[in-house]
Every structure is written in structure tokens, then in C-alpha cells.
Amino acid sequence: MKVLVYSTKSFEIPYLKAANDGKHNLTLIEEPLTSETAMKAIGFRAVSLFTSDNASNIVIEKLKDFGVKYITLRSVGHDNVNLFSAKKNNIQVAHVPSYSPHAVAEHAATILLALNRKLILANHRVKTFNFDLNHLIGTDLNDKTCGIIGTGKIGSVMTKIMHGFGCKLLAYDTQPNKRLSVQYNMTYVPLETLCKSADIISIHVPLNTETHHLIDKNVLALMKPNCLLVNTARGAVINTKDVIEALTKKQISGLAMDVYEFERDIFFKDCSKAIPDDDLLLKLNAMPNVLITGHQAFLTEEALNEIAKATIDNLDNWEKGKKPKNELIFKLPEVHKA
Ligand code: NAI
Image (cartoon, rainbow, N blue to C red):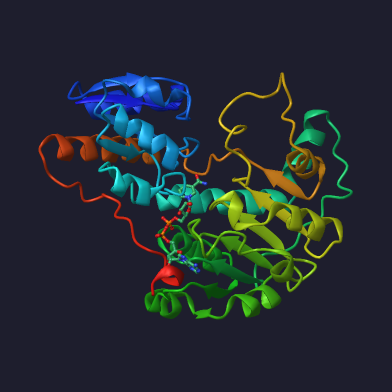
């Protein structure tokens, strides 16, 4: 099958080539999918997208006119694809349902530890042979209360990790997982209770109509002043303006984020020569109690292998006229079901 791979990063090319093993005719381009670049897909039956690509209704209509039949996502999250439009335009969509929940949960734990123990500042000091310890005080995680928002595949691994640190565990999820409650002595509570009680909060819900700005000023106001908030899910689960205000007013103690609400045109590229015109990001980057990584939680060898294998598997199935097991079906959100 002829496939146009948008937003190709050089680090993923060896994995994609190895998984493909010459089966499909892959054209790898660095440009993201946008309304303007959609026409590059003329003559391709499939396109492969990453989280920064924009498959909105208008873009999908263009892809359909250009003859595209399939979209295979190299990600778990699919909030950047209008599934309703894809269905309407007869374009089948598949994603990578799970590549390595460990990669993402371990990164969440990593940025939490780095934020708590001020590792970035500490390392900067040591690089200049400054071994002063002032302003490097953290807290023990042992015995602290950790709230996990979203206990699916990634949230489950995070639960296990935080249990390992000796944390008391609270969770919020629309579909509680009994096994986790029993195995890790975790209690499912309403979001408000979790926010009022937790010293650490880690977010692992997908971005959808219900989770958009789930963490806003009202919810942030409930959090404890010592609370460390970690977001490796999607930026827009947090209202960025509100969290900046909460940090400024010291309503929470710190934020570790791998995802950013307005990351689309900024992340995944070197912007050091032309600093983004984005006041919110500039404010966050200037705060000593905010640690940002650029959507790299998935970036392990194991995860890249799995992403490439699942992407090629989706294409193999479509070529054979079969439905891939990872196909995404449009469902009306609960609130819109009459
Ligand atoms: P999952 O589908 O296994 O788990 C999501 C959990 O969230 C489920 O238990 C579900 O019941 C719960 N949930 C959904 N809507 C909810 C709501 N409105 N309120 C409360 N709970 C709700 O997904 P998985 O694999 O754990 O991934 C979670 C998210 O992590 C992905 O959707 C993606 O956005 C993000 N992600 C980020 C990566 C990164 O590199 N930073 C990499 C991979 C995923």
C-alpha cells in the first residue's frame, strides 16, 4: 500500500523501516498534516499521523477528495482526529492502543521526582562545581497521598510505581478497576475528594469532551498548597491559564508536565532560534516550580518498536481487506446520547 507518513521524526525511521520490512511503500515526510499539507496525500491510499497532526473535519474532507482511505495513528491518543468526520467520509482510522504504558508512567514518576527533589537546579549547580544545598529541599514520597486521575493502562502502572514508594493511593475514574483497589489498597473517590486530600496528583485520562479542562480553577482551588501536579496525558485536560494562576497564588506547590495545551505548533521541533510567541509557555518556563518536557513520555526503545509494529499491522490488515483490531470507531459521548 502507498502510505504517506506525516510528521516523521528521524528517531522513529529505523523502527518504521524495520517493522515494514519492505511490505508497504512508505513515503516519510517531516511536515505535519494541516489543511495546507493535506494535498501532499494525493495518490496515497493511507496516511500515518502523529499527535501533532491535525485531522479536523476540513482536513479529513480534503484527504477523502484526494483518495485517502485509511489513517493509521502512531499514538494512543486520538483527540487530533475527528472520528465523526472520518466515518462520514468513509475513512477508516486505527491507532496504537497500547505500546508501553510503562514508558509513560515511568516518565510521570521521573518528572515528579525531578520536580520534588529539584534535580534540574541541583545538576546545573553541580555542573559549575557549586555544591550549595540551599533551596534544594524536597519531601519524602513515603506516606504521602497520591491521587491518580485515570486508572487505565498507564494509570495502573503509575499506581504500582507510587505504591512502591509507600504512598497512600486515591483514584478517580469513571470505570473503577477493582483489581487495583485490592492489590494496591487504592480507594476510588470523587474528583473533589481526591483533589482535597492528595499531596501528589498524576493525570492519565484521555482528552475528550468530558476531560477537556477537567482541572480548572474550581478544581485547583480544592488542592493542597503542597500539592505536586503531574500531567503526562494531554495538555488541555488542564486549563493552562488557571494552573498558572494557581501556581502564582501558591494554591499548589509545583507542576511537572510532559504535555501542553497549545503544544501543537511548538513541540517536537527546535524553536531555540525563534522563541515561540506564547505568553503562557514563557510564563510556565520561567517558573522554578514548573518542570516541562516536550511530550517525550513515550520515547523508549520498547515503545517505538511497538508503535512501528502496530502501525504496520494496521496497514497489513487493511491491505488484506480485514479490520485491524486497533480500529477506532466513532461513538457519541455519553452527554450527547439522548
Ligand atoms: P486508557 O484508555 O487505558 O485509560 C484511560 C482511563 O481514563 C480509563 O480507565 C478511562 O475509564 C478513564 N477515563 C476516560 N474518561 C474519563 C473521564 N471523563 N473521567 C474519569 N476517567 C476517565 O488509556 P492509557 O493508555 O492509560 O492512556 C491515557 C492517555 O495518556 C492517552 O489517552 C493519551 O492522551 C496519554 N498518553 C500520553 C503519552 C505521552 O507521551 N505523554 C503517550 C501515550 C498516551
